[in-house]
Amino acid sequence: MSTGVLPETSVPAALRAAREDFVRYLTLERDRSPHTVRAYDGDLGSLLEHAVEKGVAAASEIDLTVLRSWLARLREDGVSRATLARRGSTARTFTAWAHRQGLMSTDPGQLLASPKGRRALPDVLRPDEAIRLVEMPGDEVADLRDRLVLELLYATGVRVSELCGLDVDDVDTARRVVRVLGKGRKERSVPYGVPAQRALDRWLTEGRPRWARTDSGPALLLGARGRRVDPRTVRSVVHRRLGDVPGAPDLGPHGLRHSAATHLLEGGADLRSVQELLGHATLATTQIYTHVSIERLRTSYERAHPRA
Image 1: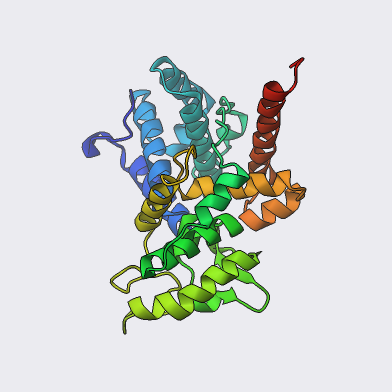
Image 2: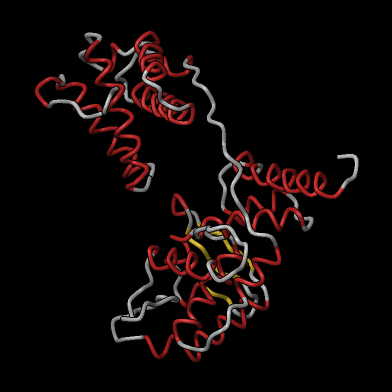
């Protein structure tokens, strides 16, 4: 199976340069996260490894036949549909970029079809489980911080990275709105409710001052050493606190995001509003939650209806 790691001496200089320029483009112009850039780079490395085996020495020689044979080999190697879909998307992104850069006279990726990955429906909490989670007891500083973490994740549906990046000034307590810097450095405003405001007030008055240090800066959420809380700590908080909710699935912060979106739609929110709240670039991403709601309805129907 292609690994995406090529011996340096076996890669023609033109392909090495194209790969490096493509990575710089993703990092500097597209502002992709390091994790995303690594995924693109690994996929492209796999494609270039296959292309070199086919005698390709430059990006201009990568045609539709090379792309299709690459995906066919991956399929024979047992690569999943989701991975095939992702690698096909990487190929299309690369060829479109290479065409714009003049490295290719045409864009063969436009004609490349790859299987769509089957998206598994995410696990979500029931509303009563979510309420039990966010109404956790405790008056220690860690309890106050954890309660605000849970309230904000569930009330706003923000990503864990967005939550950790919040500063005190990002919260408008008068309007109960939090300003979030999302993917691609796109800013959006997300409302939150009265329970989250109560948790915020207690944290700011009783909790944060006891953990804050001279070098804490403006970070809203802190760790015990006074530094900005990190995603690993938040994930640990969610898993640990969910363990205290009987029958609740073991979810991470993203599970609370899924739960918030599902409960909003089940409560009557329209899809466009949920898309804006979550910061999704396309409506198609948000539509997964309509399927979650339908599946939950189907499960309830089958359990309750005598003729199900």
